[in-house]
Length: 249
Image 1 (cartoon, rainbow, N blue to C red):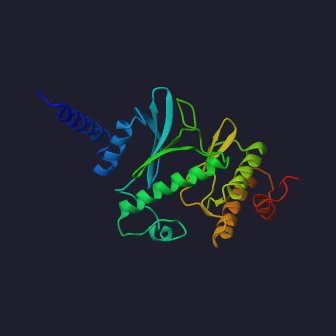
Image 2: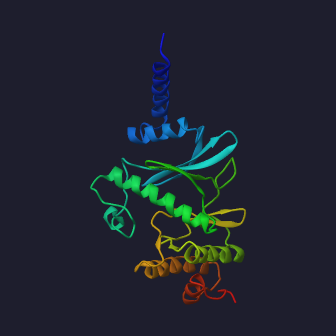
Image 3: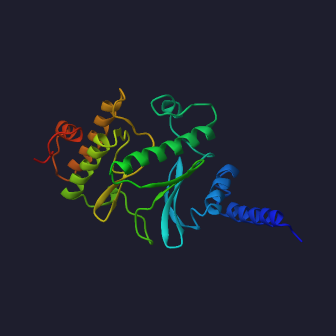
């Protein structure tokens, strides 16, 4: 007869084997163990369906009872994280140790911190729940059947344009951050509101590169919106984002 410790170990091994059957061809043992920690801590109960798949990460919808979460898993194997060295150093608060896994763990924790800053400032963005190694658990945006669509796939109304620029302004003024990689791929539209996502690379507004990156963000978003006939002026949008008057006034 097994002791309680032996029984617990056996159950853990069985659960790990089940998890590996699902994720073993995509993730290494380190990632699978982190997934398992989310189960054993009670953070999530099961995975529901995939949300997004990229070269650097996969995002799944997960649930616990009737509550849904988004689980972003940064790949530690078969990942093509672009220009890893450019993100190392004081600006991004991550160290290039030469160990890709350690870098990615730092990156996941950085996204958790930035999401906290954005959420606390009132920016419409997924609220962070927990970070374990290379896995970030956050608020799920969408219905229980389908995730919210990307902005690129939505009808762009004047209301969405105004709200998006307002979120960029709030991120800059109240959170003290510049996203640095904004595009129509970095917003989800849910209930006619834009939610900013993928915020790991955001930097502080007092960084010497913040103006350059802000201008880049504004240029990309302005050109996207202008495809729908809005005729936004980049200089006016920049002034508005940093505290000026309404760009439509």
